[in-house]
Image 1: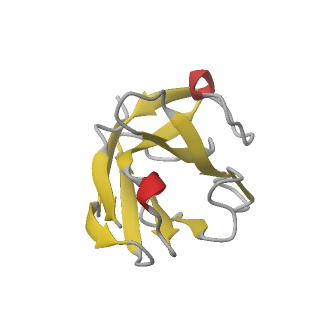
Image 2 (image 1 turned 45 degrees about the horizontal axis):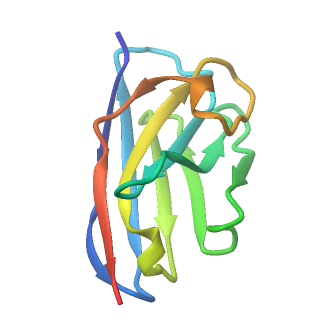
Length: 124
């Protein structure tokens, strides 16, 4: 069974940066793409960024493009979300997820293994 654990959330002022990490265990070889989603209070979970495991291609939500980057470490089975120029609207619980297939995808339904989430709060 695959386990997904996020870390790195916290409280930061607007304009600041945070780095989120996602560790995947229970699977010796990861081939499927991975992604970050977030959910603000009272809102639906939304796509943030995704990355392919084999060649590191990435896609981003328009709201974070140019401010967030995503990377993976194949040797450690980890995915990192670097968040810069944070805004109060970036506040929410951030979730890491493993896709059902190797291709990049935005819908949450395309992801099968989820972490418990890590809280990110951006103050104005």
